[in-house]
Amino acid sequence: MTKIEEVAEDAAEEGVEHKTWKGRLWGIIKIVLIIAITGGLLYYVFSKVPWAEVKYRLIHADKAWVFAAVLCYFCSMLFSSWRLLSFFKSIGLKLDYRFNLRLYFLGMCYNVLLPGGIGGDGYKIYLLHKRFKLPTKKVFWAILLDRLSGFWAIGLITVALIILIPKIDVHFGIPTGIFVVGTIIYYWVTHRFFKDYSHNFVAAHLKAIGVQSMQILVIVCLLIAQSDFHLFVTKTSPYLLSFLISSMAAVIPFSLGGGGVRDAIFLTASKQFNIAKDMAVYLSFSFYLISIVVALLGVYYVIRPSRLQEGLPANEEIN
Image (cartoon, rainbow, N blue to C red; front, side, top):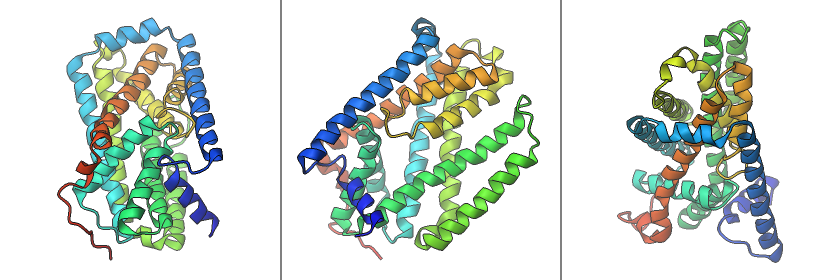
């Protein structure tokens, strides 16, 4: 078995069951570490920004715009599920869109309930391998490349925002050139070493832009939800750039769904861009709460797993 296959097998098993006492022990240690790191980061953040200030913003935020933010995040997850479906189709896994969407929300739920972020992906790999007899390595790479497409979209929007922020004294040609060259290399590597997964490359990455654009709208809605939004209307780009930077950092596995990590990065960025600290933490913490609320929609399929595949044919066709 190759190293890649071993990683894929481990990912499939993690979050489903630990077969040895070492696996159980590592699972316990990891949960303790994750809780400690997340708690430590949140303690650091709220030692710099009083909780009372953040709480005031949360309580007095315009509820209609907060609801709009939740809807935007939900739509971003629909885009994200659709994007993942493109990578599955590339390897001949023609999933029913209903099943894929249910599985996606179930995976999100596991990412919240199983600290570390790998729980949901591991469960998807396990379930798809079990149902469709597809090598775990193939599913593993489809999910990993799906994540990479998200990084690419974040990079694209980040370059655009850097150009729009006067304080960042960089000629627009530099970040643009770096991104274009990086994109060419990224596509070449994907086409050269993961050719099967590049069949829907353009479509998947357009959907990735949709995902990140909807999440940008989440932050915009949360900004507008503040009654004093007019004070920040000329500084929207720094908030959005800080959010994108924190989004890349939030994928670190040793955190509870990115909690603490995103807040700490957002707070650090606020110093660089001279934006209000309490607003920065309000945005990051609100986004974290919204992500948890939407992810918990998958609890329904945890409680009633039989509903996950309801209405689907007994056996799906895989070409």
